[in-house]
Amino acid sequence: MNERFQGAISVSEALKQSLNVPLIQVFNALTPAVFEQGLRQVGVQLQHHQANLTVGLGGTGTNLLTLAEMYRSLATEGKFRTLNMVRDQQRAPETEKTLLSAESSWMVFNTLSAISASDRVVPRVRREVAWKTGTSYGYRDFWSVGVSADYTVAVWVGRPDSSPVVGYLGATQAAPIMFDVFDQLPEDASRVQQPATVKRQLICWPGGRAKSVSADASCAYQKYAYTRNGLTPPTLESDGDFVVTDRWPEALSVWLQQQHMMSQGLSEQASSEQKQPEAGIRILSVNNGQHYYLSQIDSIALKSNKKPSEVFWYVNHQPFNGRQIDLTHHQGELTLTACQGLQCDKRVIVVHH
Image 1 (cartoon, rainbow, N blue to C red):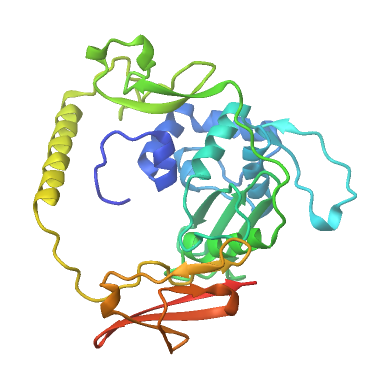
Image 2: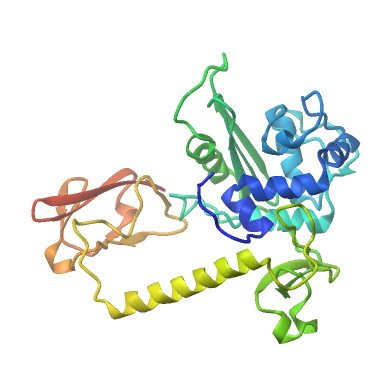
């Protein structure tokens, strides 16, 4: 919970931001029973007594391998199959079963692969990775699963005795390991292909009808959405009913108008007022802990929030006079420091040959 009301939000955006309420609203419309039946059809049995809404927030149990197999279906047109492990390369492939439609699996893959990974701006191999993280109740399990066209990487972090590690999160503990593993894998030989039946289309929100077949007067709010076989996605109200008009409830409409007026006012205020200088020097060109691979980039600019003529740079604690550093001369951890007077800011990056 972020303790903020964000108004109407799409399922894809809720999934990216890990917003529980909208996703449980959709899960309730689907029903836990239908969800569980779909998993059983492919041979997945989650560990709970009776399916209810808590399953949608992790109120169940499984193992990391099964979780990886389910995520793998996002890159295989929704097909569920047992993963081929490195130690079992000679094993005959099992018959695959359909967990998701090809359209649904691609839409989820597209959504999750759009999530940016902090401090992973320049990976060794550029690839699309659909990924998600999780933290179990009581800080006992921290996991991250990622799927590319050819590879699936699943990471669990925790203690063997299941004791809690307060303060840990899947995003900060398991995800960095997962991306490190991806950086050691070869490039993907294939790509996850968008089905021909899926198209991006401008729709009227919340009604869901295509803008091209709607009157301008009845299409006050518009957004782009992916459609399947030309069918636009419906919108759920908070009470679980589907919206059948192109207008939001009155209370939400007033809130949306207020937000629009507020954003316009802030924009005008920002453009009319002179920006105040920032206090304290800050390095802008790199993030702390970021990894750089020479196969992707061989130099980086040195930038701060201060005038270049006022800044003194240090590389591995030695004075540096340039405005750009050649990474081919460095390997491993590299410390960059920018100073103005008695104030300094430091970043530690890692260079890989």
